[in-house]
Length: 204
Image 1 (cartoon, rainbow, N blue to C red):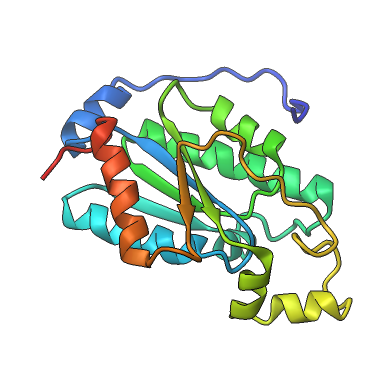
Image 2 (cartoon, one colour; image 1 turned 90 degrees about the horizontal axis):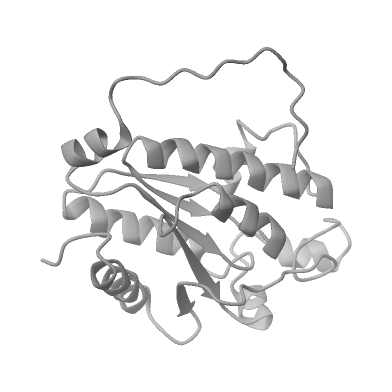
């Protein structure tokens, strides 16, 4: 855990509680945490799932890896320590969104199990849904929409996950998707079915 540097802090609570916001929204707040290799399909699925939830009247927001690194985490690189801090910050933001009663979808490689565990520990029981976007490395390399694997193979990008930095797949994710075997539509339906079955959202 990151050391608390500021002292003399007093937290303040408002009079509008989380359950009030959730009642107003018409659904509970929770996190869909998409994790997987670069080019596995995390962002594509997060966008498609958000669209499906929005069409159902859900209040949603996506946090995507590149977008966050261009702003909130622009001071961080890709060293192991910086990766840990990047995910810690995202976990804290996701917590705030949950408290606001919003469904937050995060699309980050988040390669280390311990970091994902920290993000999960910031949530109440059942508020954190880990979605393993599973795709073989060779398929991700074939896709390579940003040309990152090619650069990593040439040594132009150090500490690249899957090449010279590790990816630790989830041991027991709530949702396990295979983007090399199923279409985007099929995977979106799998996510929606899980959310319906476990009462995150209402059935149509």
